[in-house]
Amino acid sequence: MSKDRTNGRAGHDAVELSFLQKISKRLPEDLEILQALADLYTKTGKYEEGLAVDEKLSHLLPNDDLVWYNLGCSYALTNHPDEAFEALTNAVELGYGDYDWMKTDSDLNGLHNDPRFESLLSWLYTACNEEEM
Image 1 (cartoon, rainbow, N blue to C red):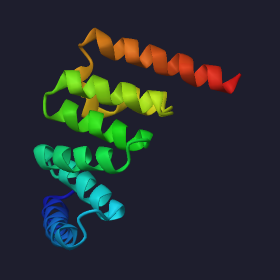
Image 2 (cartoon, one colour; image 1 turned 60 degrees about the vertical axis):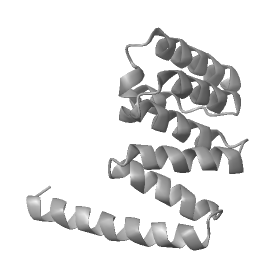
Image 3 (cartoon, one colour; image 1 turned 180 degrees about the vertical axis):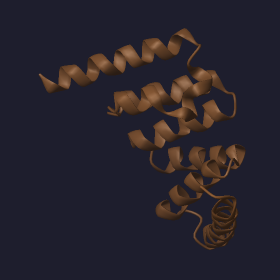
């Protein structure tokens, strides 16, 4: 991507972020706004802010596997591996089943050297293959 396009994208993200922040103040429990805000915080490198929104979403949607997966990613990005593995385990228990994505998701790179990551992947792989039978 050219520098001009990169700068344009960053400007667009800043405008969108400002817009979503304002709307979320008016509609603090709107799930779609919160999810978009969490995604944009992560995309723009504002990991602590994204973590705060993901934590809120986990309380609002306690049975949503993707919410817990995203929370695990936010914990990983903010260097909280124990909390990341707890959230990711919860995601799998709730039905998260995208082995290939978890294996390659760059948000989880900070967990790759922890033996719990391979264990989690192995468990997910087994769970996914049992469902196919």
